[in-house]
Length: 492
Image (cartoon, rainbow, N blue to C red; front, side):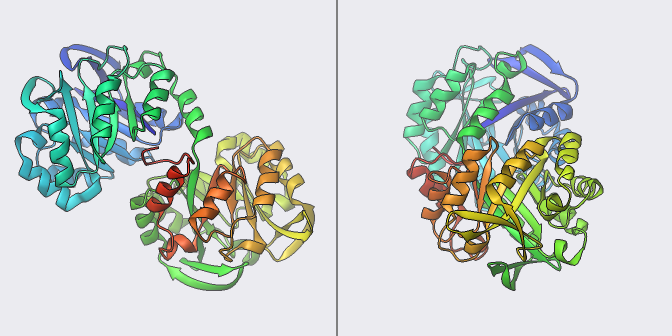
């Protein structure tokens, strides 16, 4: 379940209303951009924004401010409030807003909604704001004769894929959501349902998750300090597993080989990134695979181009050997840096980097090959040189030095599509107290399940099976959810 911190904008300020009453306004911050940056810092995966001025007047009054938020944070945002035309939708989507929410217009102008869904697909959501089971419109100031459940059925026929369902009487009251009504809606449709209104406690969040909601919007409880968002997200991250796409790049093009050999060109990295956004990948990793061998710097221009279009956390590795390299990559738009061969030559780089940029920014990557039964050594220089270092001991040292994540790439399995090295991944996951990512060997959905369960991995990374469409990420997530593996972005 995705947790959406809410930013309601009125008069250019971050506010909260009680039960949608514009006369019951509390101002929390004069700068919504700074608020969005803070939610991102605390681990938000997605931000929910409402233009309250727009909802009341039918005009997107705060469109410029919302576009500034979208262009400032690296996580996706969804926006609602006063969206009544295709032109406004296009303006938002062209300015890095990920999803647009249609409210009043979905009731008053069904043809507009149908046109929007036909043109923009899953990037269109509908807000159902209900009072006593009937839909309210015009910023919650008017009550229609349309029953909420009837509207849900109509939306399904139109092709809407996401709805935000708000019980107005619960909104801002800190009394908990209307669980019964939410459950009735969720069970009546295949549409993804985002619950809104009244989420107050960790128990509320847990119960919504148990009801298999796609997401939950949290507002007043966060601003009043009733709920600690970072604690909530830390709990979510501990439970949920990540599906990670990897772009191995050489000379500016995505390539793929097997066991680090027979490298062949695949595609343009920016175009692949756009596709992975659509497929709801959880993270993206870019490796300049020959940088450490050829002593080249990471392609900063490519990093910048990918950063402009990526909507999920973005890690960059390959040829990063100094604090200056890390600085360049982060300034170019990366969220994390992956350090591999350079750490072997200079372990202090890990501790220095983690102290300067935070452990959550530093990924400790290791390439391992089995050299004896049950024993793996670390290889450097693109898997060409046996360092003689024990892989499990090296992973422990990397975390001790300050790395916040470990990526384990099993060279023997790389590109073979015969499955991840479960034994190696599990040993390292049990030896360290940070997330461990399995890499090398994915060939079918069952391999991901094995890595995320038997292998104790926090995430599973793959390349060619995603690049060539052999495994579709949405279908993979659906499979994992059906196998009781918690993943992001679908009904759990």
